[in-house]
Length: 490
Image (cartoon, rainbow, N blue to C red; front, side, top):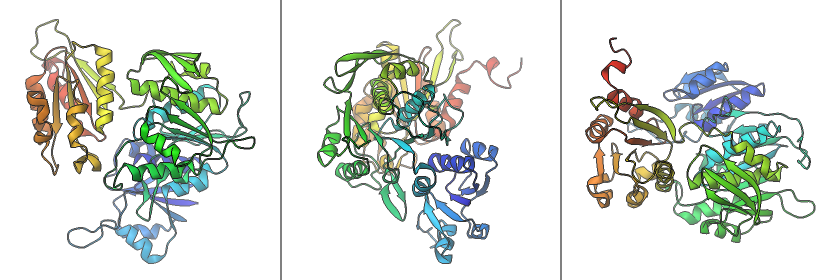
């Protein structure tokens, strides 16, 4: 068929486009400000991209329009629609559906779906699980909301061959990042309710997405609805729910109803637990050692992500010891504590320690805190960490999490907040940090503030779920000695 995707450059819809093209469909798409890296990936696959949401695209006449949740019925100040193409689709009676529904009907049906849900760590855990199954020879399909460094793209169909391991279920496998955000403007259920998984990971759960959920209880209800779609336990059942045993909110989700085989991870009394530091630890199953993970990742959050992935892989026949060996070769996901550069500081004495710049996707206060904690564990108590962040998500822009920001930044030496476009006072929200906090209304101001404070040997951690105004490269350019900057005279 021919599908035309609205919002094609988003991570989920772009991944869907990759899958549809690999399945042999003709794929076109549109977006506002068609942007890389997704636009480059899609064009390489021969997918035609159109700028904007003009009503004239109705003349493309695909078999179906696939609508991303970026599309709405909202109006501009002058009363005209922000998405004229959607209005034309509705007016004409053309066939349309949501991205998750199209995926469920045309890619996931008949496969053993392994879904990774949770407020934090979905992308990383999904990438870990996909890599474990790949390394075990199962050739899974996957759709990951980021760029996994063990693969060459964020989505693929995978093999239709049956499992090759003893005890593996006779299915082809598909690993998917299961987002609780709503499906589309016409379908306000969480995306993951479309996926019908047999293996579900509930990584963690706390309040987020204040633009669509009133409170934590509303999100817990969606998570329990997900559990209602998982096959049962027993002699003829094949469903497994894997839950973080440290999360009170997930206990409430389970209490509302769980019909599947249950495995827990994280707590000392859980089925899967860990002993040791996050960079090197023993994996225990009900108290017995079943594997040893030695890898380059840091942070307790990544240790928990690993346990979840190991438990999920075990459900489809991968031995935990083999999973642990696979994780030793796990290369993480782009923008998860990604090293952007380590450069000598311009004007510093010869031989001074370099300044190191990292990029991370953290944007929720809990994610910020765990990311900082991972870096602090790696560097030790004496290293200076400068944290740059922007409250960019709808939840953060609404100010729903502003009171938790000082807590999230407790372990940094200096914090720099980009406050452009916020409807609340970032300076007041960060007041508890005293003179350790700086607020900038523009990226230019932030760069100037950092450059006035940075010292040789510092570690600069940039956290955002957006491009952050290319602050990473701008800082690296400002830090380097003039003779080493790109384009400098020799």
